Image (cartoon, rainbow, N blue to C red; front, side, top):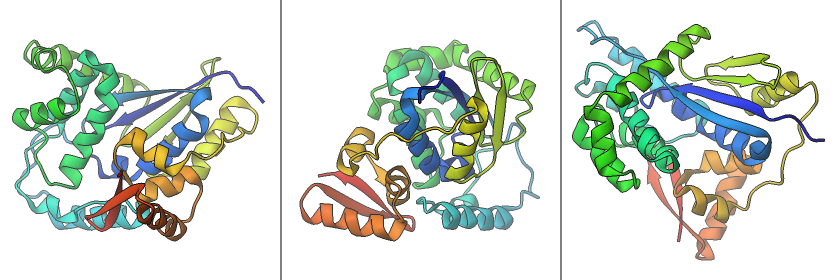
Length: 269
């Protein structure tokens, strides 16, 4: 059954641990329903003002550990114990700069920011880190610097954030589904795949039929590097089954893996 296209908007912060935890569900949504959705990303900031010494680092560290357990995504909870950059605004502005000057590279750049902060413990608020990642992702270097220096990216970032507030977005992740009649359904926080399927059904008035599961090797090649949890979600496998299948593909020389922050990351051989 064909459906009118549904606009799916993800309101996110590159620093957000729960946005990172939601990567498997969003990957499945795009892989299995991609022809029927128009997927968009809007940026915002979890922390807009510098935090004081009362910042509850141990509590947040426990939350990071919970996110890793719930999602299966690689994540280093100890990064929250490192010196804090103050806010999460500049990383969002950098992501907006990448979207402005190299739209085709924007998904890679946003993903790389998440990996750099939550797996590698790097300060993605720092311009030198942002520019290094931009270069690695194929973002136009001169255009990126100009978007940052002229405040074009800053204006666009705060425009995204204002839009989110008008829609009642109070935290990240928030994913909003909108049909052709303008009716919206919003999902806030970490949600299972079933919640996304239910939102699609509710917004369109009919159950969506999944596209066939992707070939895991092709999936990894297209995305560069994926966690076991992401491949499992996209292919409708249990995570232990996915690990067994992926290790078999590694034996065949089609994939390779590395252990990162409590999970396996897969790349094409």
